[in-house]
Image 1 (cartoon, rainbow, N blue to C red):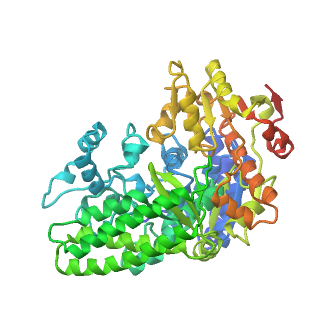
Image 2 (cartoon, rainbow, N blue to C red):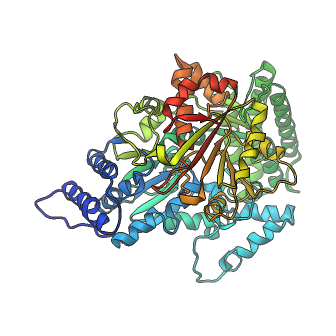
Image 3 (cartoon, rainbow, N blue to C red):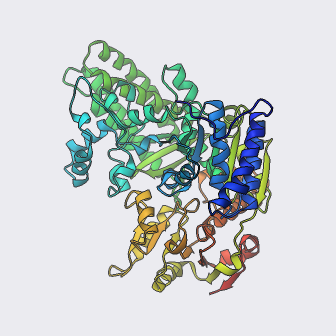
Length: 635
């Protein structure tokens, strides 16, 4: 049901004139009357967003910590959504930040109560954030792990029982299973090889029920950048295949922490080939009635696939990075081409098996869909082009990843086409008020922008300490910094470095420490805010994390967050005239500003930033000291 506007419309004023008046009334009169501070930066931001909505512009809205960015963009977003009859899409950096935005007492909840808006807010999470009943059943056959029993016990009655008339409701989100580790979750969540259209459990699937639920939203749909990009890339293809797009039609997009959009766009366009998946798919279609010729073809395909991955490991360039470059040796490319030809022949045999009904329909469609994607990905790998390829461990499995080098052309065509207003919101979108790095990386030629400072007096509430150290001494110094008892966030530049630190801890250490990945992250963040443990170690939470007051009083940055020396960034450097100034420095400067920004969230906050710096990092001090909110002191 369409909701009423939060202000009256009259014949003598346009919607945007009325919106402008309402924004002024709210910020200058109503909020101060309700005990809120009048913030000029917040009011300026909201008026700039109103103008961008009117002109359907791309707006880079950079506003320092404490400005009240969320309320500044939510008020015009809600009004515009109700005016157009289409919800506003709020896209966050990741699923943790989605939960944070809609938590009880958060900005959305508070705004709803303040103005009695009766907001209709629904979450649209990435597909891997939902339980897959098919994979769950498969996991139960392979294992009797306790976490599977816990999940089964939590399932709604309608999943396992059939009634002629039954009520269904959303269930099966990752956040519903806080004690399940990321590794365990990856055994039962949605996986791209699943053929949802042919699944006989589709009507009971939590993901399907969630999709139907959020498509009815009238005010706000909140998703992650990853899911927005998946929607953008797949929208037209899904329509051609008679499927509904992943997200509903929306009136505008607000990109919270929008500087991270490029990485989500790249991830959405990647193609993956995993060593174990092929065998899982082929085993699922084996049956007693299958012809010997088809069985031989399957066996030969598995052998060729295994040989390809054997050669892939040989020609992977040794590196400490998560993404490892691949040297495309002739023998590797030749086996890849042979594999493609062989699978094409095998697919012809599947057609005969389908006509003989020797393979169940669901398994056959899943296999056909998988091998079509497999051969498409492999063709990108073996052909001469500008695709970027690397080997990576994903879900504990060796994975070949293929990605187009640049996404700017596709973004220009499918997202920044001038049809709807798009608002980028963050405390750090620019390098000293220059938005060139962000606009170039996303291929945005025409945009509006502004930058307003934080209202906080950092000199009084923040101290930054620099620790000159040998690289091998850093972990010991991190451990020493725990001794003060402060609520501490430790930021690493990669999962590998975090895991290495975890292994270095004394077995009998006395501190309560949580590591990203050991439990569901939004639950961990909530418990950290409540003071249930002292130290949170993470490699993702450089941005967006909101831990006001005593919840966080110390941030430890283990390494300067330069971009990795991996195939993705090497490709960007290759096409840059000055890689250091155009790629590496802007990335590091934006990220370190984000990390430091975790500390001071309200006017009552205080605390310390600790930068652990080796000789190389100290040598470039002149390149990063200018972006610090206060001068750094030697520890």
